[in-house]
Amino acid sequence: MKKQLFLLVAILLVYSCKNGQKSNQTSNGATADTIAVEADVYRGPVTIHLDDKLVPLYDTLRMGEMIESVRYIPLESSDNALIDAVWVRKMGDIYCVVSSFPYSFMKLFDAEGKYIRDPFIIGRARNEISNISNYTVDVPGREVIAISLGTDKYVFFNLDSLNYRVIYNKDHSIPRFYPLGNGRYAALPKNNRAVYGATIDEVYDSLPHILFCDSVLDVTGTAGDGAKPYRNLESTTYPYLSTSMLESGDGVIYRYVNSDTVFTVDADEQMVPAIILDIPDKLKPTMKQSETDPLSRKEQMIYVNQFQLSKDYVFIDYYNKGILHSGIWSRDTGQLLFLNVFQYGMNPIFISDEGHSVQLNVRYLNRRDNVIITPVAASFLAGRVDGVKDDDNAVIMEITLRSGR
Image (cartoon, rainbow, N blue to C red; front, side):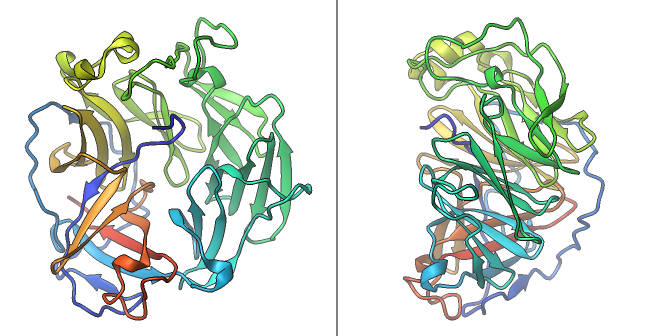
């Protein structure tokens, strides 16, 4: 599995709804709560216990229990609009849809799924890109940013002015960055990341945990210190420990490679503890074990792959016994609400609708709401969502979880 790919959270969502639901129609549970998006997100840290004998409160998630509503947004299927949708970000009234790496494309759609435009032109002119090797969606700044494949060029496109700006990152000191709002970004120091190969370019005793950058990607400050450079050797068997930084609305969540603490970071550039991972010592791998243990030994340990926050929930997926475990915990109490296991796939959501089922992907959550936004192939919803045919463009699903769990 590629090192640059993030393993995101896997959850099982099962809901009941009526056949023939209309496009863009919202199905609501009778006891649904109103979600307060503006609610304070700083109420941690919450301790999340992980071991090899967890028992969840639910084995099935249903409408009225944890799901408040489900909404379908079929994307326009004209020739210009077609895309093999994998990632979706919502920027106000615009959906930014991206296809899979390494040869990615990005397209913009309005709130009803109508095609708007491709923000980036493939080419070699100043405002064009060879292809998208990585991207950032700056929701507060209303910009999408593409890193041009095989180059040091970052192209910024503003959704309101339709203007481009270009930055050349010649020293590659910021391989990927994440928005914090107010024109600010956060990034990981270059050698504070797992790298391929047996050597590290430069030798440090320690590094800052996070770099802060301005709108032209000049480093303006740091957060934390004492992060030790490390590497995953080419011979390292997956899974392995690694440092993670994840976009989460107008901020990021961050965990150092073998730390028990997950932090949130916003435009104020403060690391605020949000999650404490409580893993028994006998199940918690060391860096040496991560680098040298065979797979048979690693399967006896717990390797946390990904963690995310919504307004009311903590989502964590981890490997144990050779299987990916995906759980949902209460952000207020730390109670395990749901746990499922998968022997294949990446970030699956399994949705059952009156005997029909579909496996989806969750690749992003915003900790200021409880909404999961993900694309699903039209073939899975043909005949169940009005007007959707097998060969149509993807359908975006917005799944809203109940608040106050």
